[in-house]
Amino acid sequence: MEIFKEFRIESAHHLPNVPEDHKCRRLHGHSFRISVHVEGPVGETTGWVRDFAEITAAVEPLVDELDHRYLNEVPGLENPTSERLAVWIWDRLAATLPDLSRVVVHETCTSGCEYRGSTRPRYPHD
Image 1 (cartoon, rainbow, N blue to C red):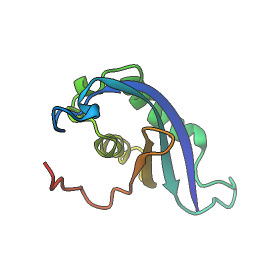
Image 2 (image 1 turned 180 degrees about the vertical axis):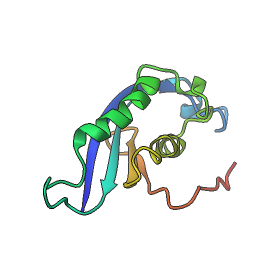
Image 3 (image 1 turned 45 degrees about the vertical axis):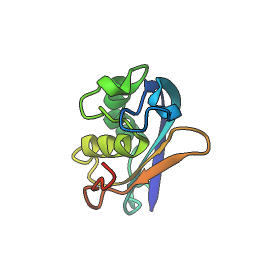
Image 4 (image 1 turned 90 degrees about the horizontal axis):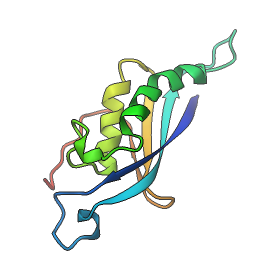
């Protein structure tokens, strides 16, 4: 079974590697919605996969690093696309949440990405 907990951050960024005339090259912000999913069996005694409070405790330090920040200044997010943000979050949670199954980043209400962490992504368009 898979469960998830959602978090919200307000952050500014720009994408330095897009063409000069691309709108995302300019400084702008998003109300990001981030879902952290874990997967496992339902405990016979607890009746849950994992306590949601444990997920919150693991994610809150990352929210503090990202919320109301200029993402380009966060180490590892110099080119802060939603895809790279999802990998950045995964890399920081995987040790604490070994049952982590995916990280979903919504940068708008209609656009986002999902990272399952099975392999380190390659960036062929870089």
